[in-house]
Length: 256
Image 1 (cartoon, rainbow, N blue to C red):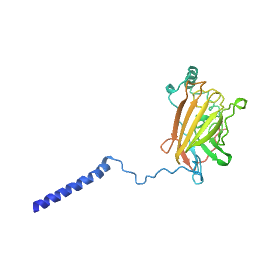
Image 2: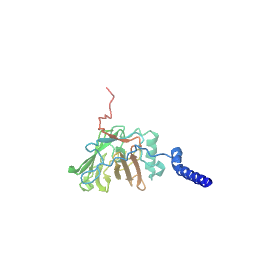
Image 3: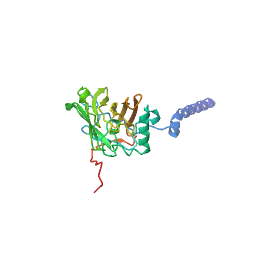
Image 4: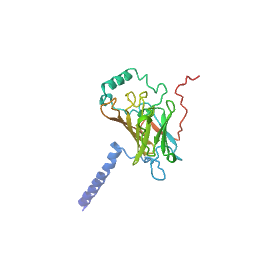
């Protein structure tokens, strides 16, 4: 009887030890879930359920951009025409000293989203979305959401910012832009012609995350369309600044 009881006790202790192994292993080599981890704050929405890409009451802020946001592919992956590759190489070799941004000129498309940052303002009653830039000439883009077409023929007036119309595809804002001049640098050091057509897609999966995708279609400079993308989140150098406000930025100021 004593031997049988001893065997039973030993077996029970072995089972208890075996059951404890997973928690011991987790404590030694596996990360435990943070007790204070919080899920991302949900994306702001309008009363009709549509996503708001900017500030809302109680959730004011702007999107700060730090150098290195990037989003462009490697030059070797871009389908240049020979002359366009030569222009790109020259701009890179001269440290983009001739960039219109250096001279405080505006830039449309992906080059609009540069440091220090930008704000997106949705104005439903005007059927327009405004994207405000802190840098450069402190300019703004207007995205017409009223279903209007692009101008055509003699009505086209090529500009630095182009003509942009938008639509919603689910929770993604799709921006279609044409009408650019050849003075701007719409996509970094990559050249463009007046045939430039840009499609941009902006989505906000949660309060502090913004995802941007762009497709460049310019048959005057490239053999086929090409794309790039970036994301701003709590884990990137560029971030949503809670409570932040747009501030004065003078592009040309000698400090006197």
